[in-house]
Length: 196
Image (tube, rainbow, N blue to C red; front, side, top):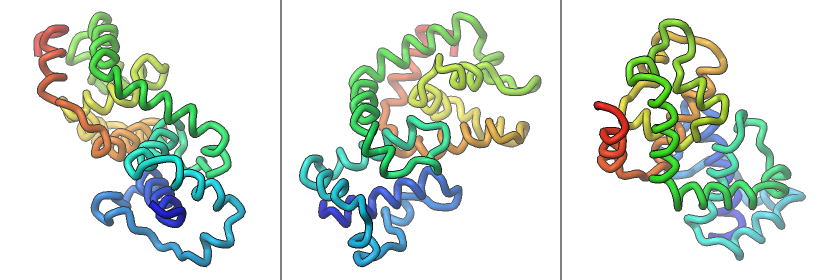
């Protein structure tokens, strides 16, 4: 990937995680940008360094790690990614290596305390699964996998309308296509924990 391609990937992924209507896959990572605008940027050396250091897939994961790790992806700017991006990318890589283990442990903790229906019940506000995620007891990966299995976010979207849930819902929706997991294996794990 050229430095300009790294820059356009950054723009496309930022737009994907912050714009409800933009879909990275639908638009094939294309955005409105120009080489002349890129050449005027003071931080273009960062994109040049990334193009030499990382593979195409690693570059995507690098940016995804930074947008998923924050509560407000629209507030993420290149300077912040330059400072803490390496750490967030490393943390996401470690999570992916132990994703099955993390999913199992987090689901065990979640369903030990609550039943299946109670975990997703939003009749009294945010369901337990969302509260656990907001408290840091569930990772973005686990809540996203649970949504792939139970499709609970669409149901909550119809019942709850508040900024906190809208942010969580959008993150789940936007992260889902990037999170390649074996859903059948995750369902088997859940069967071992609860009666699904």
